[in-house]
Image (tube, rainbow, N blue to C red; front, side, top):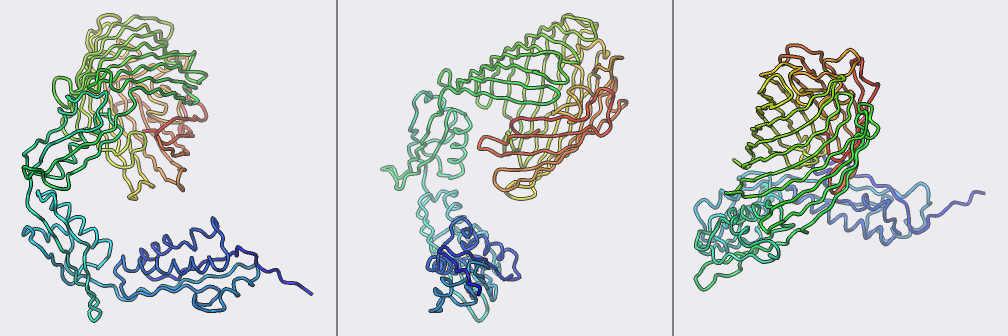
Length: 593
């Protein structure tokens, strides 16, 4: 005799949702179903299971209405019994533990309703109906109807009606024609002007800094977008962790509306430690110290120090870098920044050995929301050894650049583009047969978001560079172009692509061209994978005129954190050259580009 095994409390179950024929509705039903989302995380007994199913029926009705199905029906059956079946609880309690109880969800959408008329009740500008951004005969989706209310409220405030109030929309169903009449009741009030502008929360930040960035004043017409732009400008100074606005709820004695900016200052000092590894450059460790508000006007003082080139296959010894950087925002005028830096570096590479002291004074200016221009002067003194020959170089560079940046993130961009053309004349005071040469570069990257949440991204990168005014061996070795490594062609050792000496070490060239295509796919919440192909060539003379193209390909893994993705890339050289290894590995913070 076989004794059946009865289910204990909690009771296992399976869930099936019948397809409705509307893919968007099917997905919304699945996403809102707690019977599915809590099935494994929070097992339940009979009473809680039925309560969960009843709550889901209400959620399904909300989903139907949100998409315009106002006559839809939703039913949940447990073990083929409706939820109001008196014997349902006993059925659940005395069901065998295996197989689990079956839960069936059936949703009948019914007719899709459309908007017949839109009306606004109240005294409003003649253009107000257009601000709803809804059209007659559009699907009567609850979400769109509610969003139209918010758009109308925002538009009224944008046109000076700061105290306007738009009530919840009222809908009248017309079952005979499957239509819906929608009305909005509005109390617009009168147009108002800005009252007193107040800033609260200042401590170490000087009030003058805020005054420079506030471009609204008492007595000006109230305009919501102007207030928001000023809030964003204050946030962009970098000295505040948050900037909020609080608009007065009533007019002051002058019949104007006061506005308050509430700021929270960032910690004045910050310290960071970092590490990275690649098979070509080895391990590196870095430290960073920053004063974000040195003199009270958002000045930054940054100190960096790092040990590099520990054990890489393209290195011959351990290197270091030490740097001090001062940044003065709003130098002489708004949106203009002064950068002053001093650094010392040591590099021991297969390409060359270098000891250098570098300086730079750079003036950058934000020209538009996306374009930034820069011009500077950069003196440097270096000693470089290549192919057994050592030379001292004293150089003065005059970099001129433009940068277009519409990306949405520094470490993990998913949309937008970056384009950077630059021209850098270099005057060689010592160490070269030619007094002056010019380095020209054009780099670009773009990011195509295949989904609105940035989960599938196609990233493209390219670089063109050319040097005129000097022969290849008249150029300091560190000013020549090299290919290979994370920044150009992965899978090849750092700086290995291009002309070579007889011993296989790189010579460097006068021109470079590289291109990358990379596909990035998020998996779950914190993980991701990438696949990429890089290609590039380094020419000894004219751009694209000579030099063998090298191609690398690989895959990578990403772990997404709150401060940026951790990167692991594995790359192979597709068409190897004499000095390339069999593979390269790269580990770091942030995407490769």
